[in-house]
Amino acid sequence: MAKLELDIKKDSVVPIYQQIVIGLQDAINRGDLEPAEKLESEQNFAKQLDVSRGTLRKALSILTRKGLLNKRHGKGTYVSNIDHDIAYPLNVGLHSFAEVLKAHNIEYTTSVINQELRSADSKIAKKLSIEPGALYLYLVRIRKVKDESIMLIENRINIEKIPELASTDFTKYSLFSEIERLTQSKIQSSTSTYEAVKVGRARGKLLKISGDNPILKMQQIVYLQNNVPIEYGTVWLKGNKYLLTTTSQRA
Image (cartoon, rainbow, N blue to C red):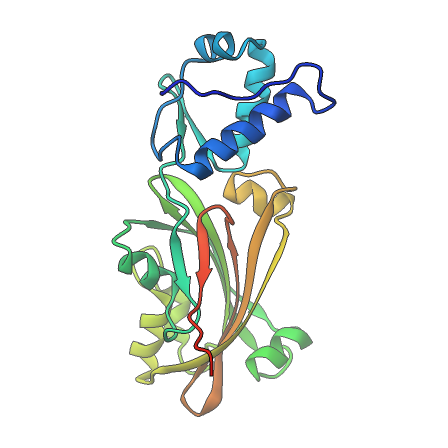
């Protein structure tokens, strides 16, 4: 690792560990520290900064929970090897996140956390235009890039006409492509909302970050042809991994 010039002020009201967090975060965002770059050992880094190892360790732990650093047992601490430029285009057609990752030539894996039939409450029934009490497929997946969890996906799917989805292996198959294959109908449109929220303890545990961490939450209803709602989903995206992009023209 190149020697970093972090401006540590020991007489500041800002705790030293927090100054280290801010300094390293800025260095990563500027590109002074590159993805997959290894940090100095804790002993050498603490000596370089003239701080205690306990103070440094606390700062590194915070950055690890934020997903900016990655600790590898017996090997050291590395800058997260996922760039901050996985761009999701908002105005260039409707694409799944799997399709966006493929478009960036990023290899990923999918783990299924939950896949079960549930009875729709009034909210889910309204979103999917089904009767309250009707069965829908509840699907929860984690997407990983190079062993780092980058998104949690919760899907609620109207399976009235596609019961085969209940037994589909979603570690191998894409939800959108399977919906289109089984219904013989193209996904036509979606309505989406985005907001920044705290991830919460349960979902943070799945994404291996603190429950207090901010995260980008997307909620979406996906429609087949003739405006038939087929899926109501929530995607929880690590904010330091994804950018939302759009192109506008001045009239």
